[in-house]
Amino acid sequence: MTQRTLVLVKPDGVMRQLSGTVIQAFEQKGLKLVGLKMMVMERALAEQHYAEHQGKSFFPGMVDFIVSGPIVAMVLEGPGAIKAVRDLMGATNPQDAAPGTIRGSLAVDITRNVVHGSDSPESASREIGLFFRPEELVSYVRPVDGWLSE
Ligand code: CMP
Image 1 (cartoon, rainbow, N blue to C red):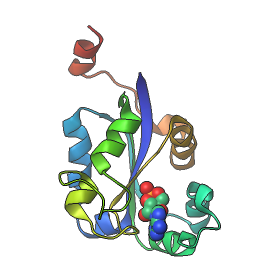
Image 2 (cartoon, helix red, strand yellow):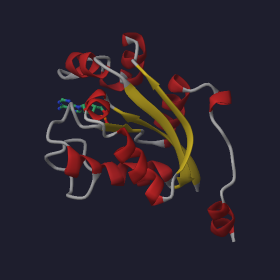
Image 3 (cartoon, rainbow, N blue to C red):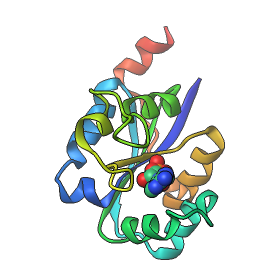
């Protein structure tokens, strides 16, 4: 089933010049980039984005970190895109993330874990709406889209 999902390259990833590496991992998998932007998140947006974690001990530190520098936000589309992104990212805690995954290869710290991806269809739709207006998402057909539907 074709899905869309939100991915953020977090401030540690941008500062370490890993934005391209992260985008490349998803593009090489075959996911289609349909939205892309860079910003420094407002605190209100960060608190909305991470609303499900409000009240947890790590919430203030996580919000401080995500607003501390630029992020790259993107929307990726493809069959099973939500799980595909999460599999490629690896476990939330980089210390548990399998070698070869983004976090397993590039991170050691649970807050500075390089990348965020939506964890369900409901989260994806909510999170995409927080970061992108509908007209900022681009629908287009690649040659491979024809092959996939054959
Ligand atoms: P992310 O995928 O962006 O979703 C929520 C974030 O909270 C997660 O990545 C981690 O960076 C952070 N997080 C989750 N659990 C913990 C924890 N126990 N301690 C610190 N940060 C956490």
